[in-house]
Length: 118
Image 1 (tube, one colour):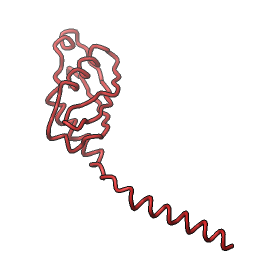
Image 2 (cartoon, rainbow, N blue to C red; image 1 turned 90 degrees about the vertical axis):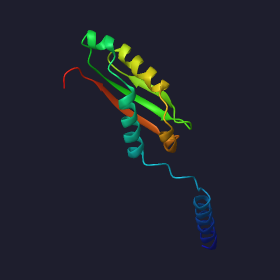
Image 3 (spheres, one colour; image 1 turned 90 degrees about the horizontal axis):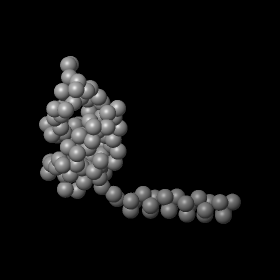
């Protein structure tokens, strides 16, 4: 019985020590980061002329990471039309905002709709 108590006490001590020194900074809320990135990219990504001329409508899903300098790294993108996907990826990778540096390290998933008539 004494051995079990000693083992439980040691495990509890290890758990408390591990959580006490785990002091990683708490990242900003994911929803807040997603909203800030969506608002920023809404101004950066325009409806491409080639898509308007050919009446292309599409939704592009993008998974991206916010870098330390406020730039973006696209982890993945998916769309029905590859030309719109490539347009979005290029526009995101060329974008940069100092205001988004507080969300560095966050992964964000965005849905970007290209609709001609809403």
